[in-house]
Image (cartoon, rainbow, N blue to C red; front, side):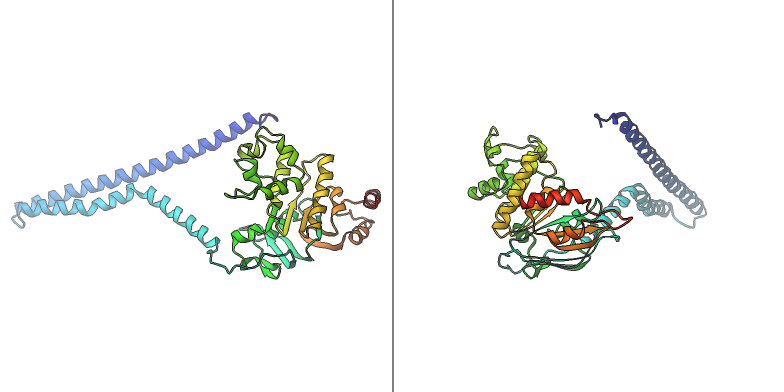
Amino acid sequence: LAAMGMVSRFKTLWGKEHLEALQSHGVASDRSGTLTSISKSMRLFLQSAMLAVGAWLSIKQVISPGSMIAASIILGRALQPVEQAIGQWRAFVRARQAYHRLDLLLYSTPETTSRMQLPKPKGFLRVRSLRITAPGKKQLIVDDVNFDLEPGQAMAILGPSGSGKSTLARTLVNVWPSVAGEIRLDGATFDQWDHEELGQHIGYLPQDVELFDGTVKQNISRFNPEPDTKQIIEAAKLAGIHELILGLPGGYESQLGPNGTNLSAGQRQRVAVARAIFGNPPLIVMDEPNSNLDGNGDAAMVQTLNELRNKNRTVIVIAHRLSLLAAVDHVLILEGGRQKAFGRRDEVLTKQETPRPNRPNVVGLNHGTNNSFKKGVAG
């Protein structure tokens, strides 16, 4: 906001919304006070009327003076709950709204049940007729995606912005549920796994890198209270960040601060890559793992992907830079949320090489780019 001269504008917007909130609060207070005053006035009027009628009946010797006093007290007690209900109506409305919010939350969150422990998966991934919407929405973002991957295979997901690549990645790591279709890891759907246990077998690098307030060691080890230091170092070396971590003031014990503020964007991304591959998970999904990396980081990421394939890991990367394609053997192309192509890398890219007349190429590949890419792979 400060860099782009937007502070005063947002102050104005905030002030406008704050003023509207104060006005609404004032109206509500006025109405509540009016209703409370009316109820008190009605109670006093009825009690006075009751005393007047009782006095008249007492003079006529129809009732005794004691009965008159008793009737006035009973009427006051009878009207008091009505007056209290009006005064506490605002609290009642807040309680009702809170109840509805909790009810909606509990309804949308499935009950956790114990699951039989399954053997550690090897990385056989099968996706059939997958359809995805954003949580709480009805419009399909991804429609009818199908592919199979085996351990040691790597796939790149390509497509223009807004084609559903990140949405597909979130569903492949069980962050967003699917509305139709199935995802099977070694033959088992995600709902057959305990959620925490399944997370140990999945590595995920989101598009927006999120690190947490803690040490480098804690972030890489996913805050495991008793981590295997050998696995931490192995993950860091595999991500090409071991030497960089040793250069920090505290090494692996360096405090990162909230969201890793003590590191640059590229360093945060490489630490997040190390976290994704920590513990040798059989399935690894990375959303633009080189978006904040320079040329050297790009080359290191390609090497990381190749080493993961050599370790029989199933790897899925969302890529906008063609450099990562040298480390994959399969390509999935999305367009408008639908699967346009899937298959061996060279076969898919060859079909996408020549755009159709009057129709732009969905992955932005032209003749020159493809030829340079092929030369790079050949080299």
